[in-house]
Structure formats: structure tokens, C-alpha cells
Amino acid sequence: RLLHDDSRGVGEPLNETVCVLEECKGLV
Image 1 (cartoon, helix red, strand yellow):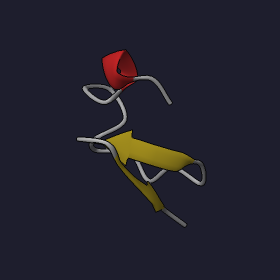
Image 2 (cartoon, one colour; image 1 turned 60 degrees about the horizontal axis):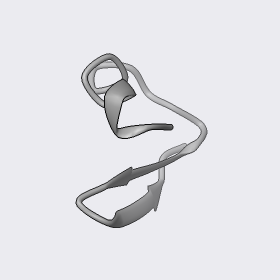
Image 3 (cartoon, one colour; image 1 turned 90 degrees about the horizontal axis):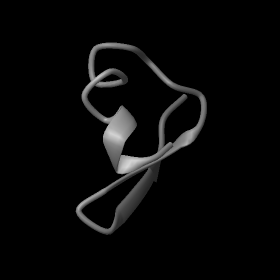
């Protein structure tokens, strides 16, 4: 996901790895 998509993917559980503030966490 891109940083531009963080605003749209905040309330939605993503199976992809989300990188925020240079921190990548895998959300299942």
C-alpha cells in the first residue's frame, strides 16, 4: 500500500503489509 492509501485503508482490515512511518506491519 502507498502512503496515499493510508487514509482509505485505515478503517479497513488489509491482508497486505501496511507501511506507516517507515514501519511495516503485516495485518491479517
